[in-house]
Length: 160
Image 1 (cartoon, rainbow, N blue to C red):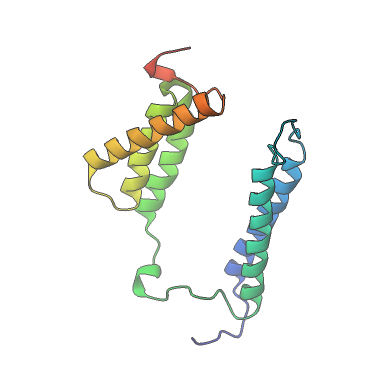
Image 2: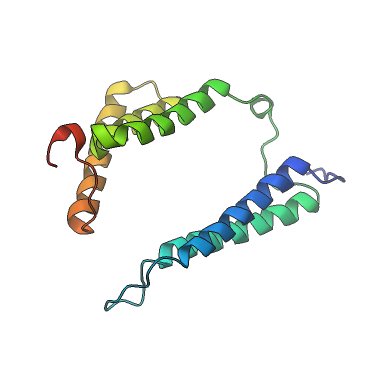
């Protein structure tokens, strides 16, 4: 692999953004109550782990950006131009999910999110995406509501 001699500003900025997001997550996790229970792992564990992981990975990427550029980045023609249609589909899917979850409910909004994300990544099998999205969304809904006792919006499927 040919070594680059100058610092890639874009790579460094993205790396530092990961570090900043990790620090923000770690600081935010401090405001979560520790909770009492029989387990040593409390509600802070996952946000703390994610925050620490973001800081570590961002630090590694920043070091690589400073010392010649990120390693193992594919350098072929397909990475020369961004796929703006896929970006628009993925961004729209997330925004639509946030807008629809309150009235459509978790299962329907998340199923639609799955369908659009799959489409953004190039899937052309709509029926399969609907079935897989519905199964995963329904499973997640019942795991969170029944298993963890969290209340997710039922929306059009009834309840509330």
